[in-house]
Length: 322
Image (cartoon, rainbow, N blue to C red; front, top):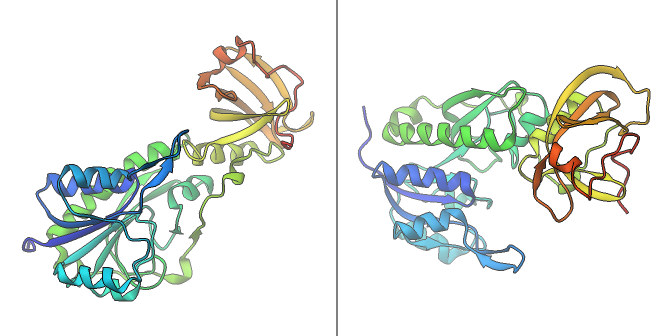
């Protein structure tokens, strides 16, 4: 039986969250308040910029709160005064203390981009690709004090293919997540009554990504390197070094998975309009889209024709940057 109309609060920050807020508004769901991270400096001028979620909320004339902490007693009191039925949390980036979890009548729901209990934590999309998972999805979870440990109300899954990047996967999951969230809110009491506890012994942790992880070490096997490039595209972006300069790798293809290293790893074996072939610890990788320092992403044909082209046969990629 469909639940009666709910008074909803929303907490989220990046594009992934903004898409879910838009979906709620398109369904006519009553969103009483939006919580989002404080404006951050961005771009070359380091101008303070609102989050994507804030932009959507302001356009819809929804009150926006940007606390630096939810431990603030005044913020907690203001939330209580809203008489929320439920608080929806999507990639908010801030911990909710128990006092806030207890505020809404029906608790707090989180849209989490993995098949819990696999990949709890900050970077589930990237870690799933990096680990070679063949499937992931979204979970609507009833929040509790632990990190992504609460019971699961609804699950939708999708495949991870050999060409999936974090960018394409985020796009797929935000559509799945919006669909799952709206269905859950429309039938919330039924889903809560059938919530499934997680098997904590099966949990894995998706630690936050450090930009240094995106440096490509060609001594690794080609399969692992390919996964890392796709996991870190578009952010933070895989990179390597060529003749002492930092070069971003946007797209690559596996040529061979078993070729042993007869050359120093990172050696350019061949160049052509379809790609630059590089020796890995095991296997050969073909780089097909590159971004040179100060430039934009280019197909390899344009890179090879550039006066700044660093990709010559015999050049060794991946040496430490000074």
